[in-house]
Image 1: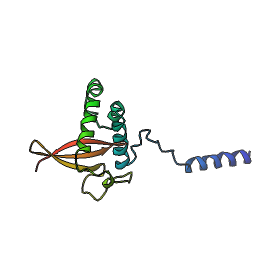
Image 2 (image 1 turned 30 degrees about the horizontal axis):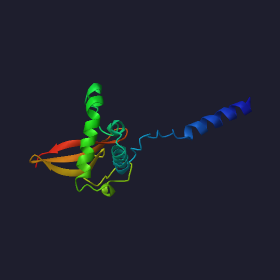
Image 3 (image 1 turned 120 degrees about the vertical axis):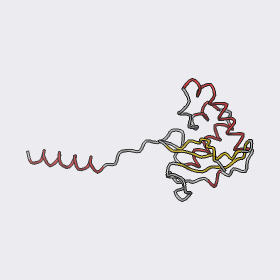
Image 4 (image 1 turned 90 degrees about the vertical axis):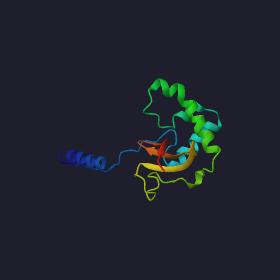
Amino acid sequence: MFRILTVILLVGILCAQTPAPETKDTLGRTTPQDSIFQFLEACHARDYAKATLYLDLRKMPASQRTADGPMLAQQLEDLLDDSSFEITMLSRDADGDQSDGLAPALEHLATFTVGGKMLDLQMGRTKAWAPRLVCIAR
């Protein structure tokens, strides 16, 4: 009886000390830099359906995401490819750049002027990093 209790206690202690396995993001969106790199890789391979998965389109109805997502991915690819955007400046830390003055779950990518308005391209993190456009009044 003593041996059985000892085994049960040891198993309980070992289970309590074993950390829960981290879920790995299959799209490679573990850091801001990785997320944009993988997004651009999908775009350059002309796999805009896959590239759509890197965008934060949660506020769009599913049918609209399916219809408009690939076009939005291609437009973002064009914007990034035709600008002075530098991927090497993005954080390689899973928590992003914590010294950029933004909320911890936001990462600054680039700022663009479109139609006389300043647009700030940011990434947000929920379970993974995803880019989104945010208008900035300047």
